[in-house]
Length: 281
Image (cartoon, rainbow, N blue to C red; front, side, top):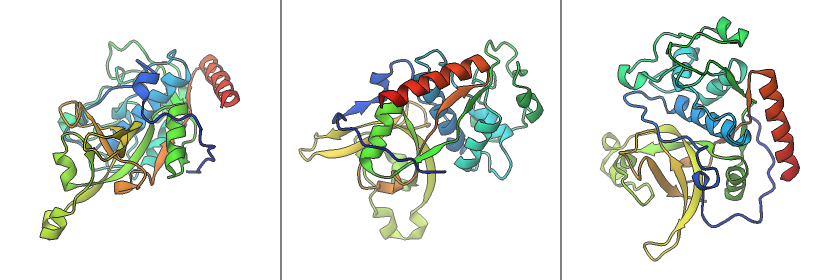
């Protein structure tokens, strides 16, 4: 993925939450259940947020992570993890339907399942047959090629403030599962006990904002992130993590994308809005 050049904004606030700037357009916390599907959920939800923001709420749908899990299986690992570049390739080339059309089930079944949305159906782009027969929206939604944002703190903040939540991948350690509240900083207590007690793996989330925590008397800069482990985890499904230090590699792989709908009239509308945004910024 190509890294874009960003001119950092000079008017960035000390704290920011995308849910406040774009009320009703940032999709909520999901529960991936017993399936390592953060790669699919974060891709689908980042796409959903960006589509809603860019269209000023006219395309406010939640795209289906289950479709990515079930149909984007080439060289992917399903519930054992997946590659973000391949997930973005799929949604760019073939598109995704809504969550209502293709509901998420892998959190319960623990398997990606058989694809119910074949490639030939998506290529026709017109009224695919939904898994949920009662679904109202049968449209297919696509994204432009994804782009990388540099690891510079101000560049990431500018991208979020201007265009909406970004996708981030970071290294999860064993103590992250015990996170409850506050600003997370990894401790190496388990490492000192030996490799049997330490564990780590990569996980994908959305960064929706930032801030400064002063509750301890020492200001701590943080990123505000939306996880996919249900609202019962962390701070109602979100967490805060050290900002500006590439802590747990949180700033090393930041992704954004532009959205578009498969219908010609909606493509035109999105492109028109995109030109307006470029003129503004």
